[in-house]
Amino acid sequence: MIFENPLLEGVLIKRYKRFLADVKVKEGSVVTVHCPNTGSMTNCSDPGSRVWINRSNNEKRKYQYTLQIIQTETSNLVGINTNVANDLVVEAIRKNKVKSLSAYGNLRREVVFGQSSRIDIKLENPAVESNDCYVEVKNVSYGCSNGAGLFPDAVTVRGQKHLRNLITIRKSGDRAMLLFCVQHSGIDFVRPADGVDPAYGSLLREAIGSGVEVLAVKAEFDIQSSKIYLSHEIPVILS
Image 1 (cartoon, rainbow, N blue to C red):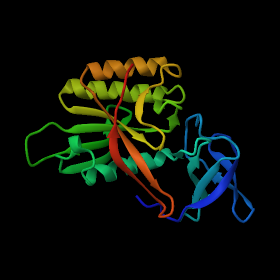
Image 2: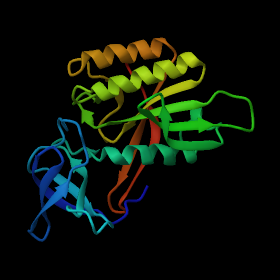
Image 3: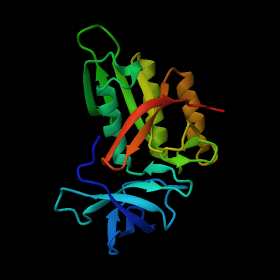
């Protein structure tokens, strides 16, 4: 996907109040930007880091710029905008980059499930008799020096609920998949962050044991073209 406006380089001064950050842009001015990430942003929110922001086309927004990408101290690029993850996955599915999901004709987003839940993506193939596939997307930005990507980076009760939903869907006979969207150039495999949220790690293993599929697909960054896209699958390791 190409960002709606070109990426502008800057330096992160600080992230605060969870959804805000101050960034010094190249001409020297400081702008307050929206930081669309609900997690702790562990290892990718250090003051002084090189960052890229872009302007929104929505003139009614209070903060016109959005923090999109940050460079870590090890020079890895990290996409911190969790809202981008679903768009990247949808684009990858439609371009047949996720081979195990290439057989479906229809794709719907934000599908209602149960009394108070939504599933990110539902795939259907009405031309043939086959089970539908429900896909829940999680953004991975927490990278370690050994190439591991950890999820989650903070305790996520909501994420645990999503896993329970996938287990229920699988038991009903449909396919259910958790897809990790890896927006981090230094991550080579993904594993559960048991030290952060042991309940999530335990539930993830239970989900896999019940037949829920788990995939991780890695993003590539093209800063000059203001572009990011999912390119290839990487392993998910439970140990």
